Image 1 (cartoon, rainbow over the protein chains, first blue to last red):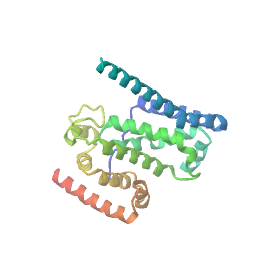
Image 2: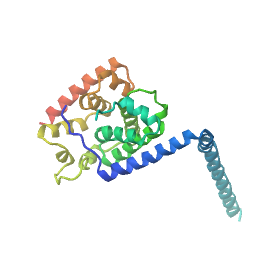
Image 3: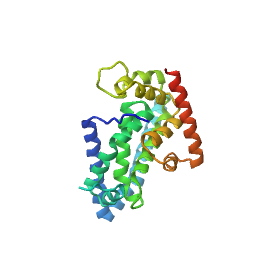
Image 4: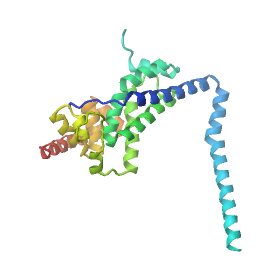
Length: 73
Length: 181
């Protein structure tokens, strides 16, 4: 099947490459420092989601309290 | 200079070599982009998914078995991303055909710009009209020249089921191209 191969424009290609290389460099740096890598994983997998969920719950509690106070006059 | 194999490049990449990433990027970027553009029917989406594919290689390369083949891995990631995209967003085919897949030649339709010849133009139209499951089978085998067993692994089906799918895809494409005459 003869179909042409098309490429992204050079600016997009360079943007994607630069982002991927930044990630690669970060990953390599972390691999060289296992303690930092563990801390990073702990933050990304547990601490950050827990903080976001807690902030969300606090906001919802605050909003419900405000609505209740408004309704009850 | 002798060209390094994918397996060698993967080993270097696992050690963090940017030059290995560049070599793989150079080798497969356009092929992956063409595959994604034909799977999704949209250039902007294909660019986004292409970026995600390469970011995954950059972050997950160490998890790959040393010496494993990078090409099927890249196409599996790209294919899964395209499938997720298609699952969540049903694209209006008529609108899709009016949008430009390939930029820049001032022709009337995206297919005109994409096609170097009348037969290629008919092929592009026929392919875009196929259901994604058949389209991906044809693209992997006929365009990417993958062995049916490797393409079956990319898609995640048994080789005999893939062979049937491929046969059906070829028959459907032939029908679509006949209709387009």
